[in-house]
Length: 360
Image (cartoon, rainbow, N blue to C red; front, side, top):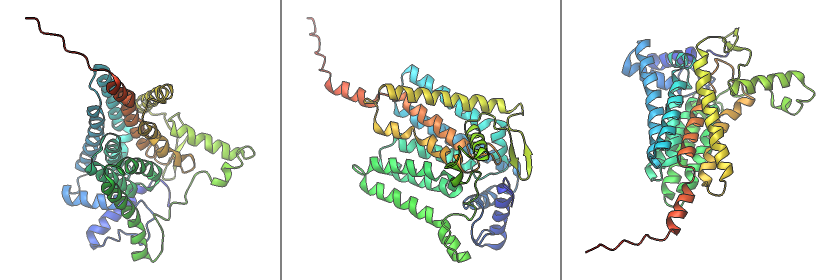
């Protein structure tokens, strides 16, 4: 099966669930991504078969997720004019990202990545700003859902669940264990499906071994010109620096030549610049910045890193959008709450101001 056909495959699987009443979903052992066929099935049950309506619902859901995530981060920090301005700028860039024509085309085609852009955004924000037990469990559940929709997001999901669990172990130990339990059980669902219907112990999908650059080639980049070209192509793709080609099915085409890509360039490169600014400020004030903030800054790297090896250029830019959603949110968190620990220390150590006597 050619790459770039996931949306058609998963739509067919959703129809199979509808017509057969079986959760097998047209595959005894998953080849395509597991979760989206069930999401499509539910969307058809609720909203019918109108492609226009399903696109509108998908676009609205992504927008709501991104806006709620940004609002959670902004409201958690001090609402000073400069921080509100940073919040507005980064939210605008995130909305520009998900409204770029190349990205809305992916939502219209119902690629399995698009629900993760909203769901994953809210999950990341809950990890960043919430300290209650419900938020810990909710974040784990949302990130588990993203993993079922796109298993190549596993590094980002593991990092965020790890951060959430580590910070909840003290005050909310039970919630931390419940969250981890939910995440692990959800991650095992594809395995249970594959064993039950197909009799094979495949953890996620049989397509997991498909990659652009074999791991062994990474060890011989100096002597392997083809591997070096592929690696540079992948890195340019991850940074949205116009890799020279991509594929939809068997059709090869140049990337970035369409006029609509200018909006995606503005969004992605704007997010990159603000993330770098946030990283530089953290390095400059390394001892003042909480460990949690430093770890959260790694989230976009964790989401993008698998595609140094695994193909990022099939139906480009579908695989990199989640990384830039995460980049915008962690930059927003770091830039609006950069000296959280220092501010608490100053407030604790500052002597109280004596009240002036009232004249009279």
